[in-house]
Every structure is written in C-alpha cells, then in structure tokens.
Image 1 (cartoon, helix red, strand yellow):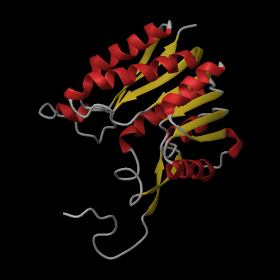
Image 2 (cartoon, helix red, strand yellow):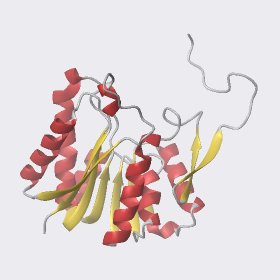
Image 3 (cartoon, one colour):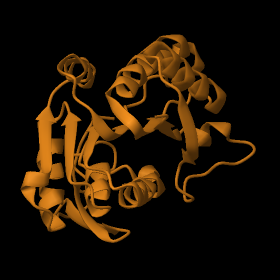
Length: 233
C-alpha cells in the first residue's frame, strides 16, 4: 500500500489539544512521530514533576525532548529553567508552544536544535551542571540482535549525564528498546556511573503507563523501562 497521511474519510483538523495531569499539551497527529505524542511516558512525566517540586530543581536538562512533555512537567513542578535538546525543529516549535500554552515565562526555557551526544560532550567540556537530567532517547535496539551496539550508545549518554549532574542531582533515564531488558538496562546505567567515577542511589523504577499491555504472553509489551537515580554527594 502507498504511504499516505491524512484523514481516511472526510477532512478536519489534525492539531489537537490534550490535558495531562494539571497541564495542557498540543500535538499534530498528521505530522508528529507515530500518534504525535508519547502517551506511554504519562506516569513518568508526573513523577518528574513531583521530584522537581520536592527537590526544588533549578536547572534541568531534557534530552531528546521531542514536543517538551518532560519540559512542561519540570516547569510545572517549579523548576527555574529547563534546557531542551532535540534534532527536530518542528518538535521544538511545538515544545515552545506547549510552554507558552501552560503560562510559563519563555525565559524559563531554552530550546536547542542539536545532536544530544555532541551537546552533552560540549556541556562537559564547558563545566556545565544540572540539578536534573532527562534521557529519553529513541528506540536503539528494536530486537536482541541490536542490543550490543545499543548498549554502548546508552552507556555513553548516561556516562556524560552523570558527569553533568550536580552532587545530589537526579537522572531520569529511559530505554524504549524491546531488545534491552530491565536487568541489562540497570547494568548499563551502573557501568556508566562507574566509568564517570560517581555512585548513585536508585530512587525509583519506572515503566509504561497502565494502559500499555504487559501480559504473560507478551513480554515485548514491557519495552519501556526507566530509572530515577540520585548522584551521591
């Protein structure tokens, strides 16, 4: 079948607005990735907002930010400033629109159309530090056959993130790769911390929202896994 985008029958707008927890987020179901919004991270965004409020984050770095779901969550929790990095200019435009939609001062958010890996290394070289970092990369290992190469990529970005965290800072790190299991992801993050010369306490384990199927006969449904790690002081 030929690839097409648009309404199957009739016509109408493709830009929608949804309410997630206490904030609003815009999306375009015709132009965005997949459905235009990553619903599976709904619970994790709320967790990020709660930590932001409880620990009084000042400077937050949101990597692979897409349309700024975690950016809005951190700002809603009281973060003073969030830097969002993504390689999609349209996604960043929507992220900026989402920040404005929720009434946050534009000065509290910076958006970078850039490569995350290069940006992390640049920040390390500059001596930048953040109170919280979100790493939510795209799928790097769709199957187990891709796991080894993906593991190196996950380890690299987590190692750089550990270096950028302030003592007592919090890392929200995720993998949506079906080929990377929970235990392997834990080992990758632990190895990244070891290479960075830091220790961390796992505060919480995260996964997909409750409307994402995880059955005994469908282990691939548990593709999303995440860790909340506090860098020890």
